[in-house]
Length: 500
Image (cartoon, rainbow, N blue to C red; front, side, top):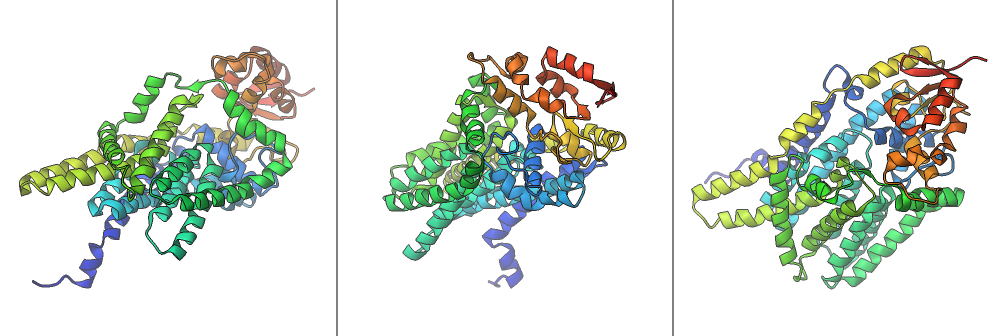
C-alpha cells in the first residue's frame, strides 16, 4: 500500500479537523456583521454597552465600584481594557466595533478547546462532535459577537479544564495546577457563577484520589482571586460589597420567572436534539463517576448540573445565560456520541454509517437557529448615533439609559470629566430600591418606588442632553418623568436641557 504524502498526513491529523470546525465557528459568528450596517447594525444588547464602557473607562482612570455602580466582578473590565482603551485615542463607536470583531475569535477558540478535551478523553470522533456542538450552539454564537461575560467565561473555564485534565509527570502536575488555579480564579473574576466549576473540580479530583491536587488548585485560585479583587475592594469596599453580594442576593426577580419555562429554555431553544445527546452523555458520565480515572466525566457532569441548578434558582434569568451551558453540553455530547459510535462499530457497515450520520446531524441540528441569530439586523443604533453626533456638542454632558446609545455617537459615560458616569443605570436604580423595607415582585415594581429614583435624579440634573427611549421611560417613575419634562425639551429621539 502506498503511504500517504506528508501533506495528506497533516491534513488528517486530529487537530486539523478541530481547527476546521473552529474556523467554521468563527465564520458563523462574524457572519452577523457582513451587511450594510456592519458590526453596529447587528443588535446590541444592554449588557454589551455596560461591559465595554467599564473596560474603556479604565484608561480614563474611572474604576468600577469606586466611580460607578457595578454588579459583577472586575474581570471583564480588566481583560477587555487593552482593546477598549483604544477609545481614548479613537472614536468609541469604532473601538466598540473592533471589540465586536475580536470576540468571535474567543468563540472559535472555545469550540477548538471543547473538541480537544473530548478528543483527548474519548477519541477523535468525540472531539469532532463536541467542537461542532459548541460551534453551532445558538446562545454561544449570539453572545460571542459582542463583549458579553459568557464569551470570556467559557474560554477561561474550558482552558482550565483542558489544562487540568492533561496527563503529565509530578513536576508538570504542579505547573498545571498553578495554571488551572489561576484560570479558575479568573473565571470567578468574570462571573461569580463560575463557582460551580470550583465545586466540580474539587469533586472530580477528590474522587480520583487526587485530594492534594484539588487543594493546590483551590489555594492558587484563592490567592489569584485576592489579586483580582483586592485592589478594587481596598478602594471601595462598601460599594463592591453592595454590587457583588447585597445586590445579587436581594434584587427583585427579572427576566423569565417560571422555573419550568426556564428548564424548557435550557433544553430547547432550537437545540432539542443536541440536548438529548448531552443528556445521554450525562447519563454515561454519571455511570462512570465511581471510576477513579473518570475525572473529565465528573468535572463536566457536575459543572453542568450545578450551572443548571444556579439558573433555575437565581433571581433573574435571561436566554443569553444559556451560553455558559455550551462548554459542558458540547463536551457531554461528545462523550455521548463516542459511546454510540463505538456501538455502531460493532454493527454492519451500513448501520454504522447510518448511526454516524445521525449523530453528526444531531450535533449540527442547532445550526438553523444560530444562522437566524446571525441574520438579525437593527439600524436603530446607527441612526441614533448619527443624530446625536450632529446635535450634541462634544463638551456637553450626554446621558443615556443604555451606554450603547452614547457609544454609537462616539461617546463614553462620564466623558467629558464631570459628566455623570451612568454605566449601569438599571443596576444603580434597582440597588437604590433595595433600601425599602419590603420586597418587590419584579424589577418593574421596584422602579415604581420613589427610592429607586434617589440617585438617578441628581445625576440627571447634571446632564445637558438626555436619551430615554423605552428603557428610560420604564425605569423612571411618573414623578421623575414629570421632572424631566419640566427641565428638558424633547427634540425627536433626545431631550435637551431647557434654557433658563
